[in-house]
Image (tube, rainbow, N blue to C red):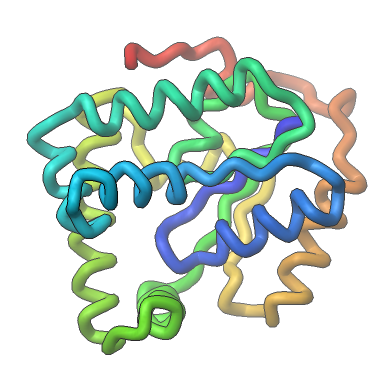
Length: 192
């Protein structure tokens, strides 16, 4: 089974993807981890690297190509990134989108990265603006279109254990034969 977990920064996608992978004995691959490693290798913060990617589309295309190949070649995987649901296309069995209001996400990021909430909020807004612009320009992906996801969940409304329980229930009760039609991205291939 290939499960994708997507959502904006601070939505809980990394935490929940890792927990789902552990619970179901699946491998976990994080696009964010790959992106942050690429940024660090080149001496940039993730925000700076996002903005550099606006000028150098090779950064996104390299990362996205890697994620697409992982989705195509592996099974028994939780693939987590902002675009995982889009990039995995018809390889994905179940697509999950996690979200929370910006203020909640900024507070989570501030806590995780030990920085003021105002700084985390400003950086998050810059990052999201940059990513949205690039996804549309490179692949014509409207990141705000949630119609491709099987589950869209506001992680601010429940505690972390309850969120994980709901997501695990979705995985456990998933019935691939109940799907009457394809997702809008099935069969779509991107030019990386």
